[in-house]
Amino acid sequence: MKSIILGTGALTACLFVVSVATAAQPPVAAHAHFRAKQVLGTKILIQGDTAIGTVDDLVFDEAGNLEYLIVENDGKLVTVPWEAAKFNVEKKMAVLTLTADQYKVIPRYTLTTYPSFYTPTYRTEVYKYYDLTPRELRRLGTPVIVTP
Image 1 (cartoon, one colour):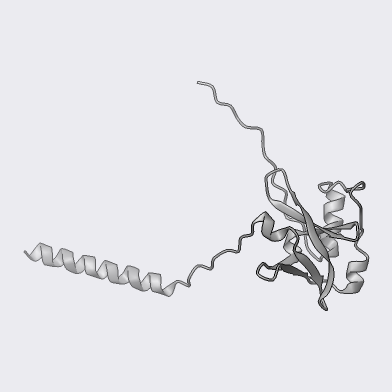
Image 2: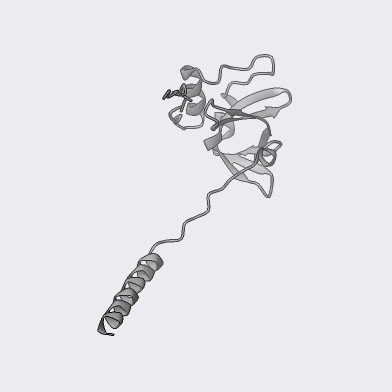
């Protein structure tokens, strides 16, 4: 009987410690997630609420990570790193923290003159316009085949 009471007391103490430790941890924030159809057609704004176009296309790296938004305005396209856009999905808009002067110097292209998105020089230059550093590209490796 004594061992049952001691065991119950120990179990109660453990549960109390776990509940206190769990209560002390901050709640885990839900990560924002987007679906392609929520992003395509989104109006893109720069500082001062100036509309610069809409998201026309998405560019993924070979590992499936979303790298760029392609923003279209009057037949001209601009590459925007995904990290540069702050989305408000309900309003179907995103904001870039660029001034009009900063935006003017970003190179434009057309459907017939798409850039080579993953050349190191292009990636570095594009990210620099948005005051960002490109993340390391993850490449899919050749699968290893194990034979018995």
